[in-house]
Amino acid sequence: MSFDNVCKVLAEKYPADFVQWLIPSESKNVKVLKTELSLEPIRADSVIFIQTDNKILHIEFQTFTQSKPGISFRILDYYVRLKRLYKCSIVQVVIFLQETNDEIAFIEEYVDDMTTHHYRAIRMWEQDSDLFLNSLALLPLAPLCRTDSSQNLLSQVAEQIVKISDRETRKNTAAYTEILAGLRFDKSLIRRLLSEDIMQESVIYQDILQKGEQKEAFRFFYRLLNRRFGEIDSSIIERIRILSTEELEVLGEDFLSFSDVSDLVTWLEKNSGS
Image (cartoon, rainbow, N blue to C red; front, side, top):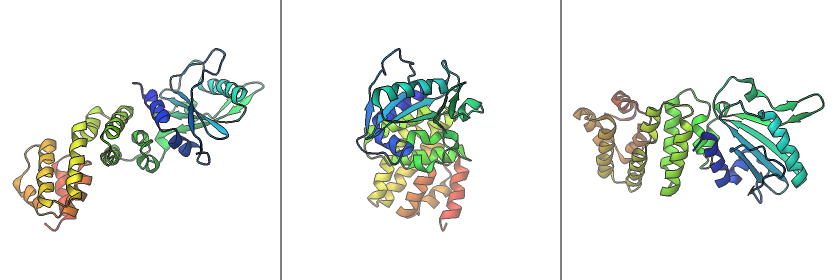
């Protein structure tokens, strides 16, 4: 599945959430339109139309800036067709997924001798991650947001995925996230933080913590450590063994961001009385 098609799947699955993001005042009677817009369609796999009470939201997800016809002309063409067919207000948004310096990603209008047409351009690499981290629908887009630390951002995403209670939803969200993260991050980092095995074990670990079972939580975390870093010095293990359930919970959340054992040692020095 292509990057922009993943976004289209998300928008079709959670249309109200995308409306709330892009036109917050319009969130009633939301539905995805299935239309060919008559005439000869200018096809783009990443196009989606969402209708609210009195508006149509036209979204295009773009991985690359170059296309035929050009993006701005295509936006104008869709506007005319939508306006003719539905006779209502049209909001058009182009969402650029991959960071680029190409001026096309910074243009928000089509201009020729007699016509000027405006639309919105959203560049994911400029977006604050908080909105995306706190939304199930938008979470797979979070790895594309602005960040000073790739690992910290992916770790935050992984933490949110682990919290999804429904197994099928969690699995699908992880898959969508892994695909989109591939636009930006090294595959080894993605697999280390977003692999299904790590996700599943983290879910089990969180369940144990919720039951307040300190000894069981320690044993399970010890298994996670061995899977991630191999044999660990016994002195470090003993420092973890005496942590409270609450401390183990914090450690479990921070663990996703550790690169190696030294990060664990640093955490213990800062967060425990050992």
